[in-house]
Every structure is written in C-alpha cells, then in structure tokens.
Image (cartoon, rainbow over all chains, first blue to last red; front, top):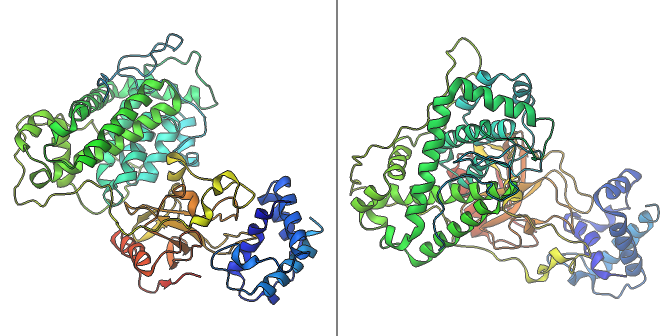
Length: 88
Length: 447
C-alpha cells in the first residue's frame, strides 16, 4: 500500500465545505474516475482509502496544506468514500 | 559561443533529403504539434480545396495570434520554423503581439517558399502532406516574388541576429551581464536546434529565434537609454533597427478583423520592405524599453511538500510538468476584453469538473512576464498549478471562473503556491493592463 495515493481523495476536501454533505460517489462519478485515472492508479487510491478507514488515528490533516477539517471529519469523509469506491 | 551558423538548409545529414539553400522547412508532418490544435474547419476546407488565393488572403487578414497560428498549422503543419517563431514571440511580448503579426507573416511566407522547394522523399507523410506541398507549389507559382523576398528577408534577419549575438557584450555596450549571458545561452540553443536536423528542432529553433528577436527589438526600441553606441548599432543591425522603428510606429490597438471573402482584390502582403540604410538616430527623449523578460518581481515558490511530485513520490501518481511547447497550449490571450484559449476560442469554465477537485472553474498561474496559463482540467495527482511552470515560482496563481470569455471571478486559491494578496493583485493588474474590465469581477482570497 502506498499511502501517498491518499492525497488524491484528500484533495477533494479543499472543495468540500461540510464533510457531512458528502455521501460517496455515484455510478456516474465512478465512471468519471475510471476515465480520469489508470486502473493501477485507481487500485492505489482504493487501497490507500481502505487502509485509512482502518487507521483512524493517522494524522490525515497534515497530508495536505490548507485542509481545514478536523481529523475526525476527514476520517468520516474517507469512510463514506471507501463504501462508494467498492463498486469501482 | 559557437561559430555563427550561416542561414541555410536544416537537413545536412548524409541521409537527409536534399533541400534548397535557406530552407527552414523540409516537409510537413502530422506529429503532435506545439501550436495548439488542428486548424479550424474553414481553414482546412480551404486547404483541401487548394484555394491558395483564399488562404493567403486569410493569412494576410489574420488579426490575432491564434488565427495566425491556425493558418500556419493548416499551411505548414505544427512543426515548422514560423510556428516556433510565433510561439517564441508570444512568450515574451504579451501586450504588443499584434504589432508583430506582419513580421510573423513574413516568416510564414518564407516557410512556404522553402516548402515549395522541398522534396517529400523519405519524410513523414500524412493526409495533409500532399495538399500542403501542392498548395505551397501553387503559392510559389502565383506569388514567387513575394515568397522569395520573404525568404531573403528572413535569412537576412537570422544572419543579422547571429552577427549581433556573436558577441552580445560588444554589440550592446552597457548591457547587464546577466542579459548578455542569457542571450549567449539562447543563441547556443538556437544553433543546436538548427543543427539537430529534426522536426521538433526546427520548431524549437524558431521559438528561440522569436524570443531573441523580440528581446533585441525591445532593446533597439529603447536604445537611447538601454545600451550605448546607438550609431554603431544602427550600422551593425540595419534590418533589426528598421523593424524596431516600424514596431514602435505601428504600436496601436489590435486591428479589427476584416472579411476574408467578397469583392476585394486578392493579393498578399509583400515581405517587409528592405531596411532604410539611413537609419535615424534614436530620439534621446525616448524612454528606454527594458527587455520583456521579467515583469513581476514578487514571485511565490511552490510549497516544499510537493517537491518531487513529478516523479510520483508525493501523490502516488506522477504530476505532469509541462515543457515550453506544451505550456503554450494553455496560454490565455485577451482580445477586446475577453479571454481566449490558445485555439482562439472563447475561454469558458462552466463545464470544468474534477471528481477529486472543484467544478466550474479553471486553475491558472501567471509567470514573471505576465503570461497567464489556465486549464479546465485539475486532476489531483496528475495536473496541478505546479504543472504549468514545472514547479517553478509564479507571479500569481489561483482559480478563474469565466463564461464565454467574460471573467467572473479570480481567486488566489492554490494549495501548491498559496499566493499572497499582493501577488493576486499582480494578476488583477495584468488582466487590467491586457484590457479585461474588472468591474463586477469577484476577486477573492484563497482557501
């Protein structure tokens, strides 16, 4: 697992005002991700997100500058994301 | 600095097809080109129809860089000397590029002259190769004199620039040492590309030539205060001095585009006139014009956290870092207060979307010369603000919202650079200078 891939989904938080507004990606969104990233890259992202859901104490907030959410909020976002990424 | 190269054929290798003296275009190619995108349908249609009169008239009346670029691609393909020149010129002179269109037109005619005299044997062919060559032959048939004069003028300009840059410290007495060294490095690169005998080499040679040409013209325009020995310069660089004078005299608002069809007589512009040997001494009251290199000094470096991202060590994926040629495809141009992309289309961010990024906006940076680059694609881990200038410092960065070329908002929202409010103001100042009406534009902060 390459934790660096986690920065990609964390990037979305820069544009997300409230974590609780995010309930995961739709089927169309997942198709968009397939178009945007190579299969190996998507695998890396999914593995990193899965790892994150198993490590809630990791300092996610420090992985990107300007992340304004708390670590707990980021963790909730990653858990919602992980569920929706299972279908990718 | 190496020995100056006499302008001549670009294909001198033993296996290279024969080319005529002065040839800077050996053939045409469909290789991915530095000049953005394919020609417009109308331009290609004209090429397909082999209507040299209409296309040359279009060349004559093209009133924007983007329009001229499309014509160059249609006529000559993306990898030619004149395409490089127009890219190099645009690189250094944002606000006054229109004034140089006539000069660039001369380079296009010169390339056509070369193409008409080239051989197809052994060259990369594509569906447009035959019509392009046939078109060049027809243009040569109808306008042989103009094309020949353009080629002669181009070769003379190259020779004169070579003469000037053989020893720039001696040519431009009093010039800053750093500028002299920059000229020397650029000219060495120009000669290397000219000697490389490759398609991209000719484009790069043209790009460097365009950049140096504009820099030298700017110095000559403000010669009274920029360097010493004006009389000596005038005698050493008569053509360049003449073009410098012409450039200054013609500095004016961008001309309105004129119709390319109708009952107007069909003729093409002749090559720029040969220089007047009695070059006037510069007006001592004239304020010196600095070389159009650095315009903004307040630059922001990239956050150290992202150093190495192009290798995959930050995001897992490799972030794209653009080279000089690729960068030009993202350059924004302002015309009549509206923003246009490198294709000449009105810039519009309404459909921009990134699943791990934002929506409805484009990321942009401004470099130290005031050139603005923007992308509607902001793909985390693959394309970021840092992509435009390959991680180098920026004079401004953020996001733009643009609707049909009309700027709605500009922010300094960039995690890679986190620009200051002052740097954001540099962007606003540059946009105003280029003619964008900032009334009603939302100028907002970063994250």
